[in-house]
Image 1: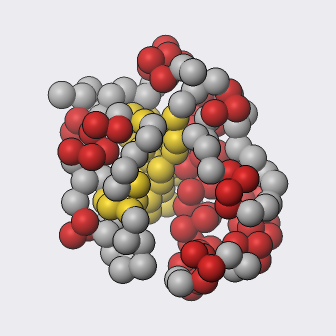
Image 2: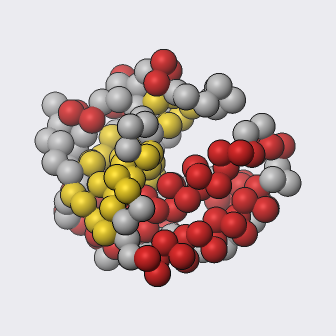
Length: 171
């Protein structure tokens, strides 16, 4: 069993503006890819939520890893924290939604909830085993995301409060 204990990270209006500007550019690029054309109406919201989660994790741990560049998805198909030496991704959902994760996870994920425009809750770390065991497709709201499932095992998360909590996931 995990030791679920949330941490709240504040996102400033200036940081939200940076996320918004970046996501606007990112969505234009993503619409060129067939996989992203299926549900283009939600692309902006999903991308903004994900970027907010990454920014919150980056701020909380004091380790910059967010790639503020735009390009083809294949270029970014690696763990979010890979460039910092951790085999960890970041998954973030808005309050009331379950984070979507791969049905076949290859790495642990830091799970976050975007509470409101200026608050992201860092909930903890889900190992690949947890992601498989505590996922439920009935909570997946997007019918096009057939390669994803919804993570629902918050009470099993490992802590994500300090850099020491990330050490087991060091490359």
